[in-house]
Length: 157
Image (cartoon, rainbow, N blue to C red; front, side, top):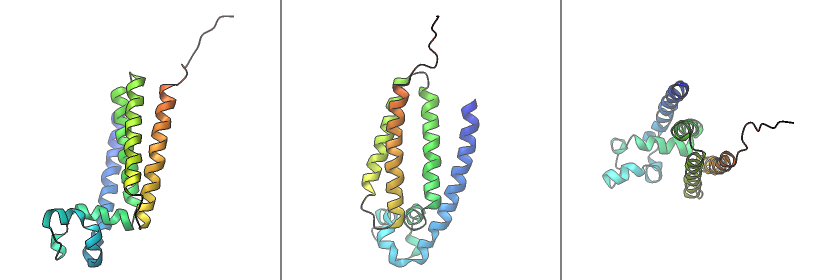
């Protein structure tokens, strides 16, 4: 039950940050020069983006992440918190499973860091740093969690 309250609050913030990201990313409709580089989802659906009606709502998030990364970064951090909280709640009885979950999560973030590493935009560089740092922290956290020292060692003298 104690994880439920945290997940509700984090879910609320995720919705708030998602809305703000979507709103900021809607500026792509006015920037037709960027359609070729930021409208990836629209190009998958329509082959070619001719006017602003062809732009998918998912491309708003891509545009915001590239040029206005504050709310997209907050979205990533909030969803990461939710995922790690869920993983901990599911695997808290087994330190081996929790550590394996964190290692997998860390590797996923390191792969994402490599994918966005060649981005020429400020947002891409910020996301590379966030993914790299988060991936390393998850792997280090997994090692610390797996090799943790028992809380209390009783000795009688």
